[in-house]
Image (cartoon, rainbow, N blue to C red; front, side):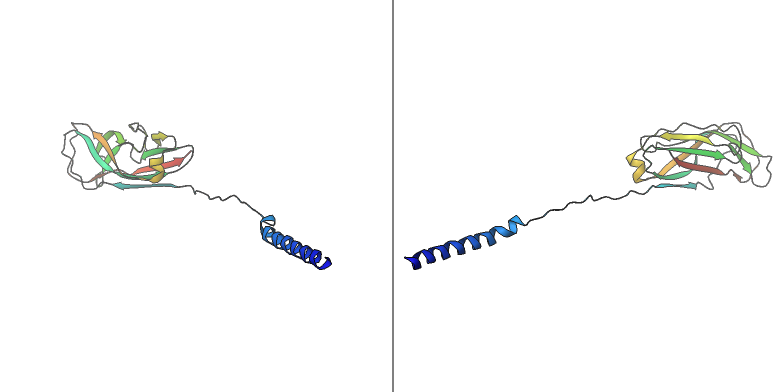
Length: 175
């Protein structure tokens, strides 16, 4: 009887030890967590490609004279502004005889993302004028290319033959 009780106790102990070994890894489980993060870097780029060699017919009106194209990208959370200034105050100046000029006004662009251009009429040379003022725009954050820039040349401006030029400076500012 003693041997039978000992054997039953031994079997029960073996089962208990085996069961605790099976349950042991689950009872010893541990967890950990962490926050994954990343940073989006600020992007603010602009490229102006002026149109060169476009013919102007003396005295004729040019209501959408091609000035050039812009590539714009800005991802500022509060949006951006686009300013423009003319070195000659909205005048194409003869490169040989600076007293010969062709005035232009209503400089504008096609829409840039959801922003709408405010046409600029230059009053003073080398002065910044706001062309666009925009909130954050995902399209502009991704980058917009080949945005046409045009201006109006009024009729009745008869000037001598030659090359006429102006220097435009576009400034893209993150808000």
